[in-house]
Image (cartoon, rainbow, N blue to C red; front, side, top):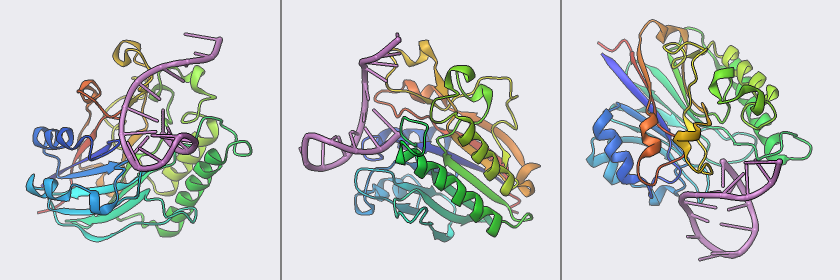
Length: 268
DNA sequence: ATGGTAGCCCCGCTA
């Protein structure tokens, strides 16, 4: 049986609840991973999602900032979330899907504007978060285990994951040090980029467009910050990937759009 | 070429 997993930085789940419900109705993913929910757990609109068929969930939210959630039509087991860099700032949740697939949903720190860990503590935090994630994978990874890692990783690793490789080399999200650390994470877990699996590396691909552009579609200065990765046991089951660019044009949109991957999870 | 917008919830912080 095929499973569709979606990831979306929603930038306030309460403000955009109707939009998310519409998305779920249209695309019917089995599992939706959200980032930047910006709601404490008591304020999370769990009931609306349950009524839409997403009865299983793990949510980790805080006031004003960050916040992640997994909403699922399928039962979730072994749910939880890790604390990174000693901050309980709601940037990670995990769950096990039917078939024993371990799903991890990340919201990696954006890192501020200045790409220097000495001058900018937010950038230092981002780099430390990446190192911790790598070390955790080196400790915990089991090469034969089916795993999915999704989220707003706040890094566009490839040349054509940004509108101008040259002009963004000094811009946080595409600097060589961040790309190197993300590549280390990818190697540490044997991850396969499930979206680039279907889209050649020489083709431009974005999942985020700044709010600050006068006309986001016309300028099209996007970046691919949102990712879905899988471990080798799931590679042969990959069926399709989609980045829902049109969602950036919806009324009062998030600056990120949904990313979806469908795979055969080996469930009988 | 530098500033532009959005969300939170208390007016600055983060993105």
